Amino acid sequence: MSNAPTPAAPPPPAYGAPISLPQAAIVMAAAEAEAARNGWAMTFAIVDSGANLVMLHRMDGCQIGSVEVAIGKAATSAKFRRATRAFQESLAGGGVALRMLNMPGLLPLEGAIPILSGGKLIGAIGASGMSSAQDHQAAEAGIKALG
Image 1 (cartoon, one colour):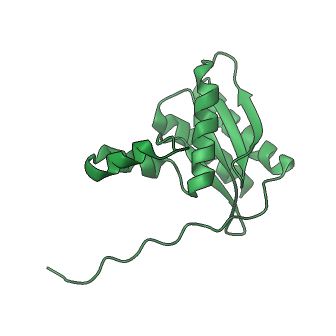
Image 2: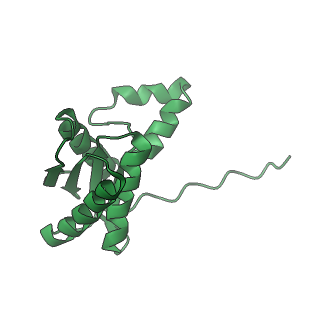
């Protein structure tokens, strides 16, 4: 058994300039295309680097409750500079991780990913309407489109 220290996690990305509307449109179109390709009715929210809503689309047939969930996921991802999957996985372990349920402005559900440009966080996309893994898949398709 090794006594070597566990390597530290890399620091989260620095905040950058807010995402532009054309950039948000690219991310949104790709996320919606992924949802449509799979027959998923979803809602997508894109926030800027300050967690302010830039764009919101609710696809036909998606439940109304997904609007607030998508916004909350996106804001959580931007404010805490990480994918919301990390919070969901931490909670699954229980114990002291349950304390995060009392953190203001935290929605610990998978389905939101930071949007980076030049290594800096310019915004985040949140998805809601399907399972958490499917929400993440659609959001990730949006991120990949921006390059």
